[in-house]
Amino acid sequence: MTGSTRPALRRATAALTILAAAVPTGASAATTVGVPGKCYVYWPGTGSQEIPVSVNGLTPGQTVKITLEVGGQPVSGIPSTAADASGSITAKLSSWTSGLGEGPTASTKSRVTVEDVATGKELGENRFKVANVAWEIDGKVAALRVKRVWEVSGLAVLSPENTYWAHYFRGAKQVGRQRLGRSTDACGYMKVRRPLAPFRKAGKYEVRVQASSTFDPNSNWISRPLTISR
Image (tube, rainbow, N blue to C red; front, side, top):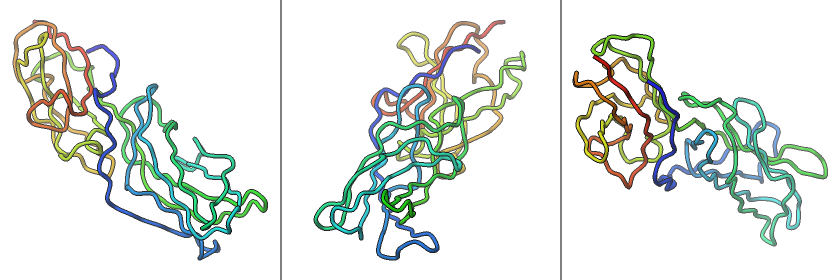
């Protein structure tokens, strides 16, 4: 199986309703950092899901640095931004990379930190997870019906469902589908063994992986070509 991962048709930010704020030991109890969501995703080489950040409890006009860390390494941020008259900041991290390569990834620990520019002191943080939007299949086994290792991540974050399906197309016509399985973590990661295809007919196909049993072209999906030989 060859081909490269293609980003989803529609990248609507998922409805994220979990609000959390955390303050590390030793930081000011008056400063809170909010990020509405438990996971955010990155399309390798293409783009990232926007991460909203709210900071409260600052001094009006106080200048801070906002940093996104993935796996303990800084990957993005805002070097300097000032609090408004109420001591608050509303920001968005709209362009960041996961630093996790291009393939599927399990949920990876991440955090947003807020640091006072003048003193260098960390004022607060919020912890969550990130992952790539990607899928891969082990192509080492030649026999069609031998089960392969499928890995998928990220798509379930952007879908109301958490079960992945592989949809098989020849041109515009869908010719088959296969249930892959349920995601197992906050960022929609899944690793299972399934056949290459649910049929034996040779030919060239397009496989579209989506977190839906019925393929929806207006929802998020990733496509790759597949050639089946006799």
